[in-house]
Length: 88
Image (cartoon, rainbow, N blue to C red; front, top):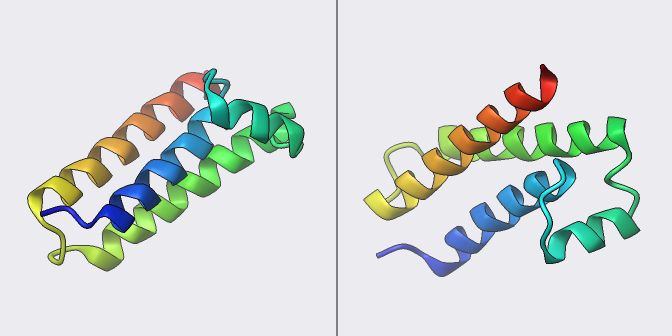
């Protein structure tokens, strides 16, 4: 069974990155208010979240249940795609 705090952490990091990349949701308003959506800062924020998620995946490898591992893998893949698309 997925640990709720782990799921919350992954979702929070992903939402921060997505808000920085311009997704419209509640996090976007907060990110804009905090100055995280300036073009150069937005990419840095998204890349930092991706690095944290990647580190989390490396440090927890073999210790996650299927749901947690899948959630983390999907978040990393989605953010990598978004950053690659935004970089072109």
